[in-house]
Length: 347
Image (tube, rainbow, N blue to C red; front, side):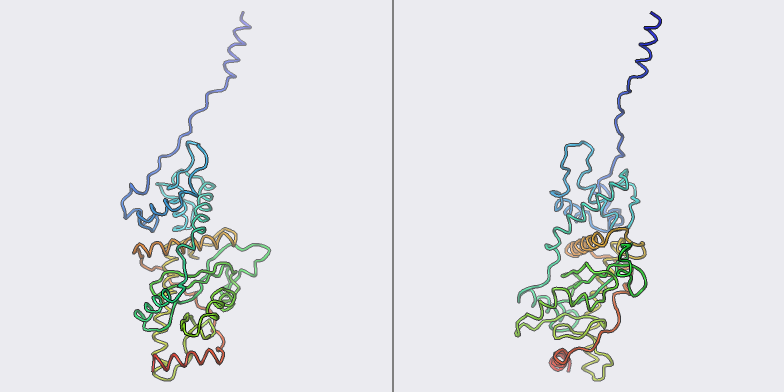
């Protein structure tokens, strides 16, 4: 009998304890926070974040019935926290209690969902009506005629692939992706090229983009062009500044050109001030070049969404690396186009 009692007690001790219920830290929905807290944390208005959640809901909705799957708003605010800080170290709030691995998955899912919708928010003016509107804005705000966009480039630091390290080293001797953007007179980004390593020049990126083909095939009666900085070569469809201006018309041209061109550098500064993950001050992005490109495009989409909601932020960071070395002199046809512009509008 004694042996039987001992065996029963040993069996009781060996029985597995019932699993304890997992405890998840309570998360605070961003809509319950004061507006100034949301703006400081995510750099976007609560109404815009709510719209973003609705926009991405189909892609981000948990596909399983698990009771502890992350809700859409948690995934969105976790990604926004990374965009605005460049780190996975989250403050107390919506993303509290999420592991770094889960944060990384949130960033990936949200980024890819935004990129899939980029064409809805980043649109270059096409057709006469849209181009006339863009030209009118540059003429009204900066006094430079015929302009449908200002083009420029900026660098986004990354950890380079070990097998192609030298391709990503830029002229400032750090590793980066070299991103090209065109913006309208109000700073809205209308065209993005985010696929080239840091060693590729501004001139080469522009030459390989779709913009050259687009303008070269425009009708003769559709006079429109881009404006670019000193790193570009003058073209019939790309107006650059005049080196060593001599006449009053050339001085007036350069003044107006500089004012209009400043919109693209301000757009880059605003982009990096709002989304610190793109700023070198926050360190280098520890992702593949493709992932870095996707993050850049996603931030550009959010930048445009913020502008469409009337939300601007003070520019805190200068983008001194958006201007490269001086380009070569333009062709005879390009110089003729600029002389005609000087004669008609600046003399």
